[in-house]
Length: 86
Image (cartoon, rainbow, N blue to C red; front, side):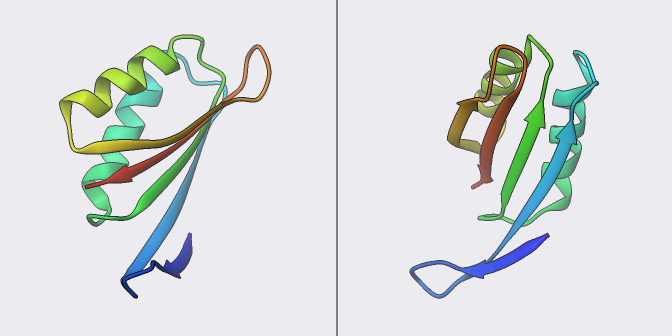
């Protein structure tokens, strides 16, 4: 976990989840569980190699209060997501 202050001097925390090796639906379930534990404004960075993760995570974000800040495709198999609870 990393702690920083945003432009409004509000304390934010960054959490990391390495979900490589987990296949659908485990990554989405673990992300959902983590978002129940963190505070509004906090950020969750996720690494995964689940081929369905892109679609599943975006659908999860539409259903609960999560904003996708960044999506990177590291290579054909690995993806990185930066998500924020709002």
